[in-house]
Each structure stands twice: as C-alpha cells, then as structure tokens.
View (cartoon, one colour):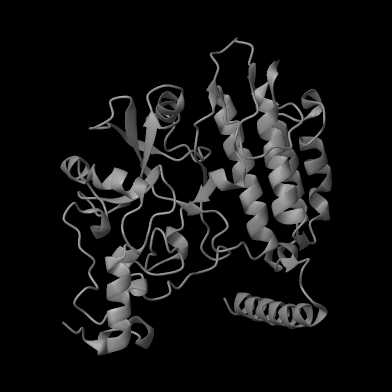
Length: 373
C-alpha cells in the first residue's frame, strides 16, 4: 500500500527499488528489537494495566509500520531503537503526560532516596532539583527489581546553552540543588554532566521525540526550539544509584571509586572519605570542563572553581557557601554580560567575526524593543 506522498517530506518516501531494499533489510533483522528493548516489550501489558503506555514499537504484536508501504523506515517512528538499556519513556494514560521508567534493584538506596527527595513536604520546593519520582512499581517478572516512574527530562545541553546568562542560571540552579540535597542528608556522589537534565517543555512548544531529540514525535520533522534566555528551564539531578543517606548526627563516610568523574582525588576502595565534599568537586569540575575550557569569557568563575576542586576535601566550601559565593558573582554580571553569546574556543577568526556581528545586531534589536515598551 502506498502512502499519500503529499503528507510527507520527499526524504521520507521511497522509490520502488528502495522499498524492496528496505523490505530485505527488515527481514534480515535490521530493525528488530534489541535485547533491552525486549525487556520492556515483555512488560508492555503490565505497564499498560498500571496506566503507562509504551510506544508502538514495544507492543507484543508489533510489526513494522513501513512494510507494505513506500515509507522510508528511517523516518518511521517505530523504527527508532532505544539507546539506554535501563530507561524507557512512556505515556501516562490519565493525562497524556510523558514519563520516564527506570528499572532498579530493591537492594541499595535508590528507591528510598528517591522517595525521600519526592515526599510531599519537599517535592514542590523551588530549591528541589531532584527528578520527581511519581510511583514505584513492582517488576512483574523479576521480584528483585522495581520500576521507578519519574518526570520525563532531556539532557541539559541539548540544545546547547548559548549565552553567559544561561550558563549562570545553570550554575545557580545546580548549586542550589546540591545544597538542597545535602540538607536532606543525601550525598549524590555522581552529579556529573550526564546526570543533570532539564525539563525541556518550555523550549519545545510542539514537543519532541524521546530518542531522536531534534525531531518531533513523528520522527520525521525537525522540532522547532526556543531560547532559554526567553523561556527559562529548570534543571534536575537524576540517577541516585550510588547516592548515600546519613541520619542526623552520623559521621558521613563512604568508600568506593564509582561514578562518571574519575578526577576527584579522594576516590578509592579502601580509605573512607566524606562524600559531601565529593559532590562539590564534581560540580566544580563540571563547570570547568563544560564552560571554562570550551568557551572564552568565564574567567570570573576561576576563584569559585578553584575552591570547589581543592585537593584536600576539607578545604572545599560547603554547598551552602559555594552557592552564596556564586550568587555574589552572578549579581556582579551586567545585563550585557548576561545576554552575550558563548564564544567557542574552537571558532576560527572568520567565524568569530560573523557570530559577533550577529550577536551585536541581536543585542541592538533587544535594546530598541526595551526602549519601545
């Protein structure tokens, strides 16, 4: 059966020869479910009974939608493989909200810490930047595991931050967030870049696909995005898999060298260390690698980052002090500083001239609009 080509962009429609080619590739298993996708397919009916629907690809009776049509499978939503084994997106049936599902072990502290940080008394606290856990489901097949139902988020840097002010907001929110986490008696221990995400809804008014993030949910058309400068977002910490909770008055000590960031000097498997200063180091290291080393103009972050990444954990500021230090820095930034674009250290001279010219023009338009209000 042929689809109506007028409803699709040219690149999503195949010639008869391409149809046969893709049919053969499909029969050879090119778009078969991966092993971790089979895991979620096996739980499709259970999750649906609990009010959560997976994408069509994961239905037990799924057959590729492009077979028997002239659709290019690369632009069919159900051809898109999931890339993270333990995490899956779903739609909540009651209101159509997208959520994230994560399979976790009953052993360890991830479930109790998730509940602690999502309890009614704190879940709506503006300083709480922990991914909300909506529900904990028992895995229907493996009794040693559970499925966390959480707020859907996307990577904090997709799309990339574009202005000094956007970076300042990111740093402010993450320091505020880690201070909040520490006040709950929790040390994250892995608050590296990959474990900080954002609620991207303000940036994507038409939505986006949960795997092909640059596309709309149909997997065909690019998703238009707005700027953080005009549409602020909230950042969240995720993945409390190696986090630790300490009761008040208990000396906070851990061992272990897990985590994405291997630079903290205290990481080891033999000598106990305090994990709270570890979080400070990891964030300081993130600010250095993601911003100072990639872009010009962040010299003002030097003293803060240097203090956060001191060799001796005892010399690092607490989360509260680091947040206070940055708020003073943030208050010293002028409006022009805040709105200025990020200038990559990889830019060539011609690129810099063009981008700076555009930035100056944009700033001029902004000021004219302000004068007219």
